[in-house]
Amino acid sequence: MQPAHGAAIVDSCHMAHRSRAAWLLVVLGVLAATPGVAQQTRQFAITEVNIVDVTSGQITPARTVVINEGVVSEITGSAPPPGTQTFDARGKFLIPGLWDMHAHMEIAGESWLQLYVANGVTGIRDMGSSLDVILPMREATASGRVIGPRIVAAGPILDDAPGQWPLRMRVKTADGGRAAVQLLKRRGVDLIKVHNFTPRDVFFAIADEARRQSLPVAGHVPLKVTIQEGIDAGMITIEHLSEDGRVWKACSGGAQYRADACRPFFEMLARRRIWQTPTLVALSELAVIGTPASRISSDHLAYANKSFRDMHAGNQSFFVAKPEIVRILNDLADVAMTATRDMAAAGVGILAGCDALIAGFCVHDEIATMVSAGMSPLSALQAATLNPARYLGREQTLGSIAVGKRADLVLLDANPLTDVANVRRIRAVVLGGRLLDRTALDTLLAQTRAAAAQ
Image (cartoon, rainbow, N blue to C red):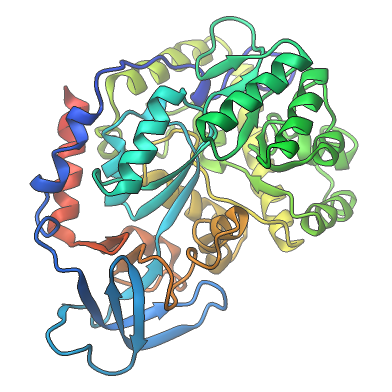
């Protein structure tokens, strides 16, 4: 993030350097070490479960969900086929796997792959990591060799930020921007990310080349580009409401949010399918994480690695000396909640994203914050399930529970539509058809916590 008045503040995803210890040594042993995974049969059934339809908000009670070869093969009110391994889910609620739509695995570290899964997150969109980090992770989780979420990857951020900001590929000219997009296409990224300091002419060249290469463009609308220009050039998602509230300031005509003035603008965003990843928790936590004012518990912080803790300790030393910036950030976070609620009401697609907060736990927090802002539990749950599938163009295989869709599922002890906090009450996770029961999930948590302590 970069607050108003030109203050040089960078969001949590741009202030860290990480150790590049060989990550496969940490995670490749998880399959064999995790109970309830290695010897699992190819077909099993979850019985007597209440299915949450995240499209309509309806609950279908007491169903049998048969999973075979990684997909949902049958949903029925009767018993599963003879000989099928069963998991009794009487009184439980089944939702699609969750997504974190703004991750940074180069900062988070390799052990957080399993932390995501332990918290019911079966997919992430990485919004800035080096290719040598994120592409091997994407392959390892996609192949099933490593327990972790499926990964949609932007690769490095394309901009020309001052100093030594990490996670970047420097682009200074229009030709350089086009060449960068072509290189990233060859390497197999899923999207292109731009940022505050992507030069204006470079941005338009990147957007044009990305369109030629059939790559979507997302990120921060560059500071030298207006929000409308960014949209017209082809950006399909805007992160953090574009820094210091530029999305809502553009329609408010100034620093004071005006809901009535912004409604036509929000309706345009909805018509043109311009998605928003507001990262509400990250906005509110940037200045306070690790302090008594933070809502992130010490238990959750115990899963953070040393580089994460050091990064935020450095942040706090900065913010202690700049209390006026803390006030600005707090005000922006409050307005962001209201603007996000109003955008959702206008039909704008909202995506749940964390911006490198504690993996998985942060998705639960983001969903809860959306409800606190005034979104319904169903809308907030859609931001982490159905909406990512729609954004990615993968509704046929992801985002809801139906026959033929990938078996990425989360079994909850209670109904998340009556209390969205129930997304934290996880009984089991199905990852690509692989069942991890509560014992297996607890093992993943213990492994991550032990890795963080090293």
